[in-house]
Length: 626
Image (cartoon, rainbow, N blue to C red; front, side):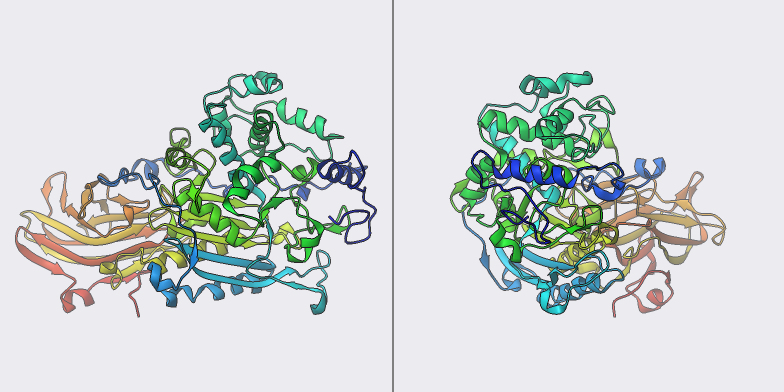
């Protein structure tokens, strides 16, 4: 919002340069003026955070059959990082193990989002860094393209997106709040087990007295996802009181509900303990020491031409450009625990690298290494179950819907409703920053996660996450709502028959499934094949019902599956197949199958390394390279 006097459309706004009127209060007054008579405000006029896509819970059988991929062998926790104080530098992709030819697909991925009908976003800025090297940057589209929800600006009035465009991060702001909270934990001023009400007594209202700091950081505090602050309450004190006294939806520690209210509350604790506002605290203790000079709340008017515009709000009759998009954050003066931070791709890469360095960057110690590890360790699997959400102390973990090909139990961090995302893969020390203004000109068009997934998966392929040993084999699982079968036949003597399969799997846990099956009646019925997966430097993984799902530890496995039934070894003509199914949304890298063999004791009955046996494979929905 321009200051002082008018916004970009000439609408009268309160001055904030008058004595006694802070910028935060002035912005709130503007929000109040816009909300006058807000009865009838459309339900679409609030962001409600940016939770992962809602999906039906996985079938119980699929969830129960998920292999135990943890701990993944005798290796240290990937977030057990002591790091270094070195800073990011520009490098060639090959210098940090990235395939430049694969990364060259990224502009086309962004362009497809821009050319989609309707566009998935107006503009995008992308940065890929690995092993402390910024290996790729690209920008496309427009930071400002639309005059209103249906009218494009003339070309001369548009603002092209740049690599240094400033974006409204929306809920990525939560990670700054979580970092501030953890700094107070380190200082001994706060404990994860502290009851929130011990710091903010009003929070005890409506039976919330036992909700802890950790409950709020992990979104299991029982708070509702959202309440309307911006038009239902007249001023900041009443809005804050509404947050503190809100009635819970569930008892604490029993259900995961992604809620902005918990982070708003945690920010209030930070402000009380530090004696300063959240924006001042973040600037002094996080962004300032890190040199993140282009990261801020409430950016000044002179930066407006570099800021990506967001939504045209029909009810207000104006475009949101230069101030926070989230209505609740705006009504709190643009500074809130759940939203409000603006930043660039390079600044966010610094923030991410600080975590990868174990809490230090360029000599500035922001967090202790043990704190970083704790933040990126899941705390809610016991509540959400197999295939459910995963949360550390602030970061979102194992989020297939945008980590995609980079997903592991250790991948983080967060998305933002405006179309932003930050992904850290500690297994390869890789950072992917994708900033878009997907709500420009309207949130109704916003489908950013399609592009987020494609970008993360492209980076995963550039990193060579799929082991080279299986890349020449059959591939499936790279499409949603698909079924694929790979079938071989064998005539068994009936002594000790076994299927050996060389395979790689990276499938959304409990939703996308690879099942090994056998049929002894010409395909009339199929029986799952229990077995075991082995690989060098890895603990074996038992497959009790023939079903493989999950992240697969990013290694190629040799699977051994005895061809038996309840009466003993199978004999005669049998068909063996690998059947892969994907659900309607979200996927990982899929599955690759290399060599398949059927043996009976030492006799090799089928070996797909032999041309005649390879030609006899029946592949439906599986493809070979080239």
